[in-house]
Image (cartoon, rainbow, N blue to C red; front, side):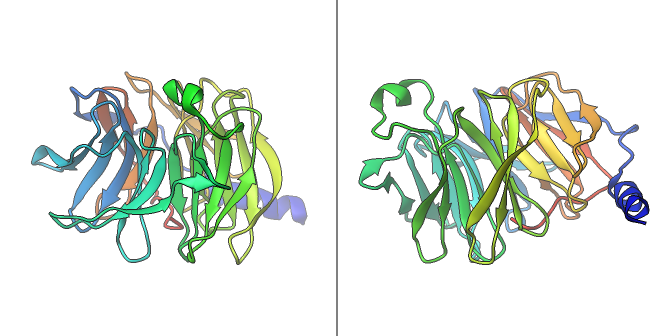
Length: 289
């Protein structure tokens, strides 16, 4: 009976990706990263970390600069009040701001135990306001680091910052399961995906490796409403919740990160070095974050 239930669950999670097509949405960027769909703007917001710019891709209306001089932005998310969260890798902090034309910047996390963060890379927000982010050191951040480890962090709704893990390799992309009870983290150096169980208070436990020996260095992660995991690596790898490779979306450039968007949340946007791509799917993105 248990085998039968597992088989039914796998069938329900399965999707048909055979007819999906990858379309280039825009190009000419330095290094596209950290996409996020904004319902308020009806646009895809994404970062160009090399230029310090956050762009807005407006369907049918092209590309526009949304924010400039943003301190090496690499990831975006919304908090419970619709404020924009930004991982600023160059300024080595997590900040919050509004979508208004004259926004103020509020620093949420900049130091851990008195020492500056390495360079926050990616972040995810649970429905109840808990924030999770990765803090690896890359490039010049290695020489300027004050912490002797690459961390995965939890920022509670009250502003308390706690350390989840000190992985051996550098953590990169981060996302949540649809029900918000599992945290997924990509480890670029190890080419693995880690998972952590989250409780009602947002605390993490039961660290484990769920995928390894991936095709390429894993970056950004996302989940859909069925719990399937999307990984930006050499291409976009799509795995079922039980670890089966369902499909590979081939992209001309190496993908960096992912986001579901448009009104029905059934379009997957892919940032990939100098370009942004989109793929229309038959499944919605998860709304746990």
